Amino acid sequence: MITLKELCDYTRVTRRTIQGYEEKGLLKSVSKNKMGHLLYDSESIEQVNLIRFYQSIGFSLREIKHFEEMDPVEFKKLMEEKIVTLQAESILVKDKIKKIHSIIDDGVQFPWKE
Image (cartoon, rainbow, N blue to C red; front, side):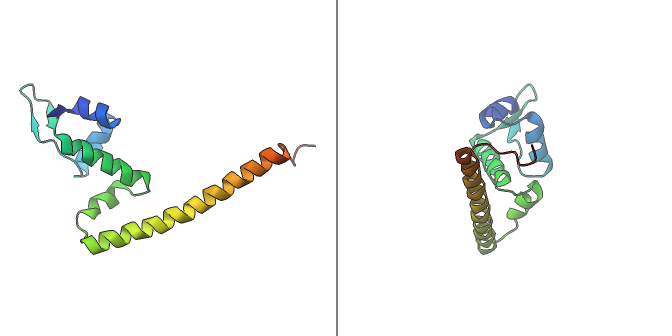
């Protein structure tokens, strides 16, 4: 078992973030120690990391909470749609990188500057 502080340290999130996950019903402590500190298990670390991953790919906490209610087919479809979205975003980022390389190769230009 680990304390809230240790959970924050392991997952690199703030205490407030963990509390927010608990308020949304995405995470809960497994017990308290004799000093009244909340305790978590190794699954809590995995859960926080998974929540952070889903947030990093664009899902809100409300959407993540809704995952619990989805059947596996519905969840798989949602993840497949997210792949399509991320692939489209990836193309846009690659285009921006090409443009930056072009600017570097051609020399920095400021057309608005005379």
